[in-house]
Length: 124
Image (cartoon, rainbow, N blue to C red; front, side):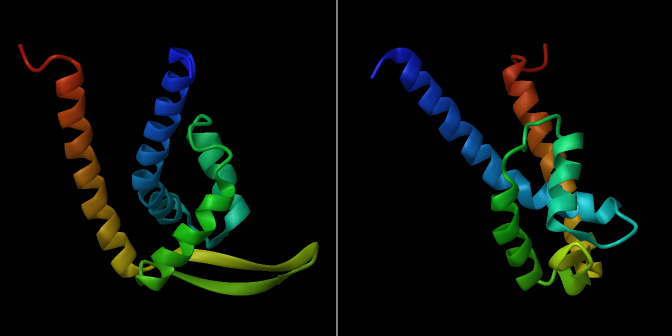
């Protein structure tokens, strides 16, 4: 394996590790900002638009996370018939989900600030 291949492999691994820790946060955030329940494809499109492609192509990975968040009581869902295809599952954030989202946003901000300080060489 060449150094370039190894570097690409390391980058993909790093991106996967970063993504796995942030998908739950951004899913809760999208649903927390939405005035109405959303189905998976809508959520994926919103992430694609707002995430500038960073989370693009991860649509299939969203569904297990949505189910886990629902199992934890952070989201609720309902299945509704669709005129253009199979029934759709619509997700909405719950009150406990909003509380957890506030905590996660604070944790994310603290982590981001810490990492930014290290990457920028610390405070002079």
